[in-house]
Length: 335
Image 1 (spheres, rainbow, N blue to C red):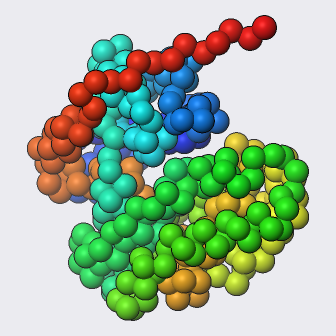
Image 2: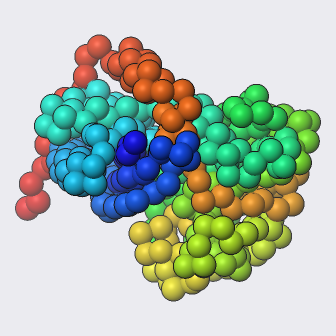
């Protein structure tokens, strides 16, 4: 059985085609399209028509790629950049009607549950009570559990791209006062969730997402070319030092640091502040960097629970869609 999953994130659209006959999603092909949707979002959160056109083109290309690799149309989902858009329903309709791919927007709590499942399968039962942190472009997901699925999940508006737009809009090194303001805001948002994680007392902490992977590399973790099975540990003290290092540099120069890619350089500081503050408040001195996250979680649920699970998720998303979609806005022509 060959299945595919498509992840529409704040910066990229990523396709994974995997063989699942053995009960484990083994990737056979991956592809990505850099759209940087979060950079196109208007002040009120609306995705303009130009961005939607790019998204439709990328989803159509992903479907054709999945077909060439012998997979059905992908299980497609969008994270906070689409989920939070006032014109979300119109965006989903444009994608579905023009590509034949239903684009589901998962609630943040469901994203946390799926990422936890992936981390649990990767870490195994030896990990014991497990805490998972996942920094996306629009939100931070936190999960804790002792079994296959989490006992506790939370989704907070602490994504790296979102906070960068709010606190660090320019390219120059930010005012230290703005960094302090961000750290204070993160502490406020995380206070109750962190108290729950400390009370639960996880044996193992896992950090998932591209943001954590790049920050881990900056802090000395092995490069990706050494493969997914190389252990990678992110220490809180190293991440705190990395945040100070990133804050001293303009966004363009951060891309010259180990692990920091040019598309994510601007938001790397916000990601580091959120990650370090979350680890500090939850009492996590170090976290294992997990190469599996939400995409693998979706594939695992599909393998273990069958296609009916995704159908139920899609129906729930339809039920939550606004009854009166907000029309797409046509970008004004430049003078």
